Length: 373
Image (tube, rainbow, N blue to C red; front, top):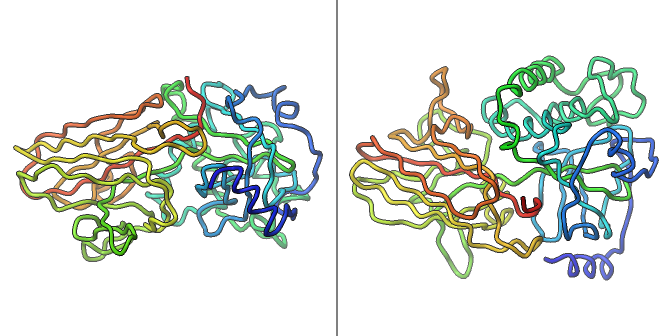
């Protein structure tokens, strides 16, 4: 659904409605005015008069659910803990990128490792993630140790004098972010998108995507479970994960060329929730797995192909890799083959030294609206 159909739909069915929650003292100060004195941001070209639908997060995965012009539901987060949220449909919103701006390095880095943190710790909820985001923003300032002193904190985070999140986990991750940030190549860390609107500033990151074998039945596209297994299924006794995504296989050597779809945002492995952004060609022969990511779909938001910001590939005899502690994991950072990219549309891995039947996982971080660099 493009932004114009989205607005027409809302006008006919419900009109624009407003409800308030989360953060309370609305000042209606624009993003450039409220943040520019502290942080630089880059206006996203062609995205200064857009449509947005804002809803509460529909699961434990995010604070908000955000839909932009391409119709994809994205995980959204609250930047200004002391502002009201404007729910429903808005037009005229403006989008800004934090990529390449030093002041946003800590937040950008945290968002780039968020999926790894969640995969390694299934108990990490949207609450800890939201509090970490607030803690990494200097305007408005936020100190998690003083949360009881704040009057307008969301009741989803703090209620009746009780913390609804693990404060020690928050502090540990904040310490990790700050200590690890110094070792990172900052200009290779993807940015996030900030959305200026009639309420608090909303943040969305780039989309996580996975390769999956699909097939058509009665006009519908479904997962071909002969080739792809969702992480939440027990393909190995006692081993499953809360994260969405697929392991593919087993493939025998030699295995002829096969084509997989690349889906972004398909929470709970539901293709209907996601968006196809590209295809992955895979071939296993003579102990080498060759996979090629190709972005084939045009973003309804930018009018250009979706692009790759990061790719991670695992290949091995087990359906999943193991972390340094010897436990199976689906954290992309543990896949063993990874690369950061600058909005490219094709990339190939050749992984050798393999033998016997293998599985592989192909993950990507996909952008459909970051500015061209």
